[in-house]
Image (cartoon, rainbow, N blue to C red; front, top):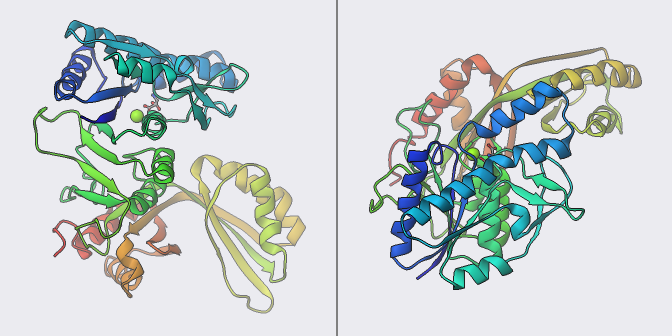
Length: 413
Ligand code: ASP
Ligand code: MG
């Protein structure tokens, strides 16, 4: 008998019939003798609908009020799911985040979980209840309702698993695991049986949408055994989805590259003809940071005649704001020649712990892109990833070519 946290995403909860299906699946695990904490998301489309309503009344909604509204989707879900479980003759009880309570900081719309009071949940589990906890929400120290950022139910699931020392946290979704890349772009993409936490973390932060990045971060910190699997398979299917592991040796698949992530959300900015002297990077990026804009890839060339160019990328939503800061503040301050930018870039990244021990992986990536005539605009590397920024027109071509070049469709030898 194990203690399992199961998170069900919006698609899994998409309709009364789907919720009935989820209830049957939970009953199946319950019959096997497991203790269960279940974390549903809002029904698919519901959070968008709620945020849309809010913005219709006020295009720049206050964060506190937005969270009051957005959190209701999950409140409906826990009630409905508990009712569906009752109908199957099971003992189940629902909780909102503040009833549990899940304590967060006060960063509305992107709050972080600080602590979880597990008293109610433990008591109910001991009394034989299936405990249904609303994902995505919590309460701050002043009693305000907060939400954890889009996709935040994953984080609720993982945080509960950590707090209650669950044997496993199962993320049920509409795909049956973590793939080498998005199968919608590369039909030959292969499902991974296992992936290391580090790789999953990179993939999540580089654009793979399977798990919310914060949930992966949380899982790593507390070594939560995390599994991604489908809520659309047969209950007794042998398909165990993808397990996120913490030991490299545990990973049987010894591929050099595990996956390819991509994102279209990049915008590129360049300040040309800046003097090559101490303090320049700070003079350019300081004002950007002050405006709360996250900077991703950064490159600065060595100087010719004392002048150099400085480029970086930001999220596409921040492009206009960043461009204005560079033109209005930075350009005069560092007497730059020019400011340029475009918001038509994409980032493609290859990820794998095998890169630590194998030379020439990046070269192979560049060779592949050269063959396809894809121009590389920027390059960034870390121990287990290499990213390139390319024109978004060529993003899918690059992903497909790299998937083939690294033979990700085949099981590693
Ligand atoms: N319902 C929230 C969202 O759509 C949280 C989640 O689904 O994880 O972002
Ligand atoms: Mg979701």
